Image (cartoon, rainbow, N blue to C red; front, side, top):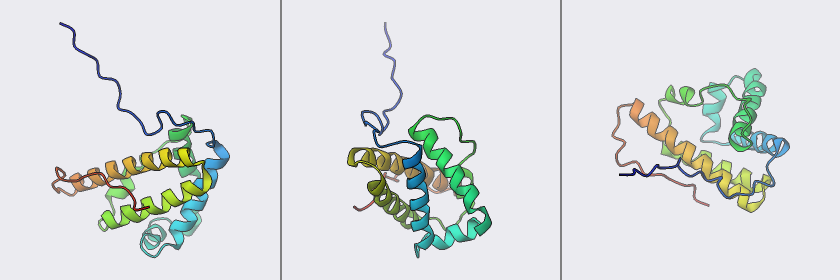
Length: 152
């Protein structure tokens, strides 16, 4: 009897050309996105509280390395991106929805349409996995949490 081997789960990046993705475009994504985050009335105050003004350059570099590791398979990121989010009791679906909306808008500005769509879908999957982990960490029932996407 042969047992079929299941391949790894598909990625939103599978089949995407990623022709518009390089270190410069990733840097543009990260810097533009976090500039919009800092101005946002809903999530901006959370970021301002969690990241001291003098630490923003360090955070931006870390996020560039994170995105580069995801999109270009570089190995420059070291960290645990979920950990800080687990400590924020006020995070809700509304915050994640806003984050996704801002991310998608920025990705659409920076990348070619197909690349932006794939990169945004990957971000939505990451946000959903964070959402599940946060709910589990809080002792909430995660069985009915469905993936969400930003309203376009």
